[in-house]
Image (cartoon, rainbow, N blue to C red; front, top):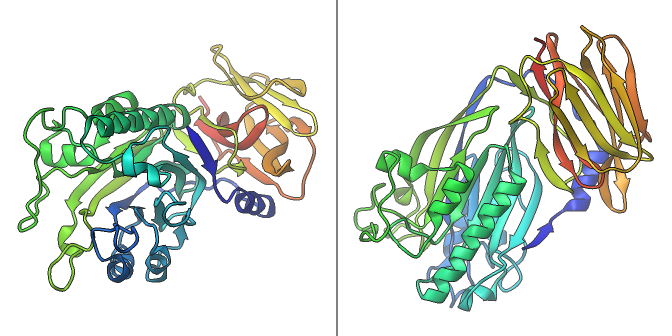
Length: 437
């Protein structure tokens, strides 16, 4: 697995120079739409379409969708963005043979962009660094969904199938590790079919608790059987019933529920004036309604896109009192931790620094935390954390910086968990609130 985090310096500078707001009550829910589209942006002569003419048209027609994931966005990338108006767009990784062709255009801000090149490829798929991207899209204060944009190995020879199975398994392991406990949307060109016995798309779904939007909406939750005839689209009469290799997969988590409201093959909206496809793939779309668990609330995060993502959302105990907060620090924050009355304990970060602990009295709860992010060795980390209890007591460690963010529990709530990123130190941190029992 070859992972590259992009625009790290820009993200770090942004975090260090801005102050996230204190926690406000998030909306009860909302909606968003997703479009996945392989836009056939290979250079003229290699592309099966007419990307020089069609790419600017595609840039215009994808505007109505909240989050757009494109694949094969190679040599005509500039014209795609020039005709598009989404406010948040990932930077290109380059044309053929340097870039992966994967980009996300969104009405919602994203962070933590990661590009991963497949460990295995076959044939012409090795000419570009195909793989997947991962980013975290913010729907509201403390409401994040992990988005994956995917382009797997194509072809149907035994070597192609083996490479593609390896791709899907690699993606599955990454999701299991880096999106544990998070809501997820995977949208891209998987090059898989449920009917193809040599594909392993079912592995990705079952291992990560994902639902296929097409299978749910068009198949009543039951995919076609492996080995059945392929459900190929008839371009003269495209319907949502045909299976395409482009897929939208999703799941919620303990905090965010995702309800599928729509699935559609958007072929009719992406045709030329003489009724030809704008690409050699059909664009597929899904609509979602999201709602929040009223027993939980999350803050945004402060810090940088380094380390490994974590969240206490799946396991934070409801109705339990925090009895102790722990903090390891030196010049920066090495570790944060909480212990509950029932014995449950969380800790995130490394084992360096000096450990300090604050035992909470009966009726006392964690009210707020102030975080100071800063740069160390080109990475944004949490330099200082200062916890304050409802009794006015504090536990603090690390060094102050010019930037700070304070997250305060609403009345009747307590800090009862964390989410963010960590390694040997704490790279990014936000808090999980629960109601005081």
